[in-house]
Image (cartoon, rainbow, N blue to C red; front, side, top):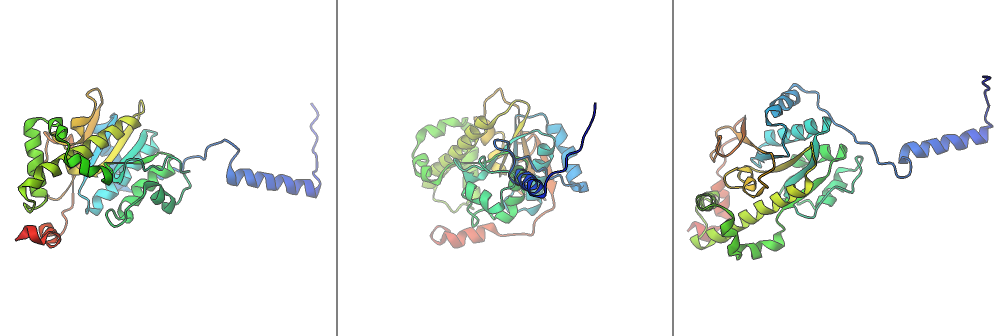
Length: 292
């Protein structure tokens, strides 16, 4: 076979280069943007990936954090990165955003600001600097991040919904009520314990329902939430389908008080202790009448 070489006229060559540039920048029509996998090469990230192995496979991985622990946010980013790099991450659900908020329409090249808008992020309640790395790792990988929390507009109705009292076994309901008391430093009037417990249960149900909607065969949905929400006896696991493989991971800062162990979590990862903080003093300042 005879091969010949064709030399393009300068104008035609320029047009071809321009067309190629457009295809490179924008992608072919209808072709999805390729994921941008952000694999951390640090020893810590490798250790996190290895520690995940005993919890896999799982339809759902519930990661319980202490909200003000920087080490927990780093571990969450590494968990998301590890699962995404292996093609095992179905979605990331967040306590930190309400149901209905989602990054599903974003491209992997989306900016932090676009992700924040998509999630309707409240930076005063949840500092983006802490949660942004985990969120953007999923976005870069082309994996949706969704709000999973009960909308604030529905909290009043939940407080008055007596049917929520029956969604936990009796002992678990009492333990949840006690958790509300202690979590508010015994400052709440007793008349508020039952309504506040109902909100907690409604939030757990909402998170569980969100996880059900995100399931993909052979992949794992990750929930990032406070440790109380991932407690197997009291929280989201109580409202998940019985046929699911769900693993609960507690990230614990030092000797932080609270439930822990085999009865509450499938695994507990200890992280460095935080400086002593009088959380009750701050709460008393917000509830001066209750403190009297």
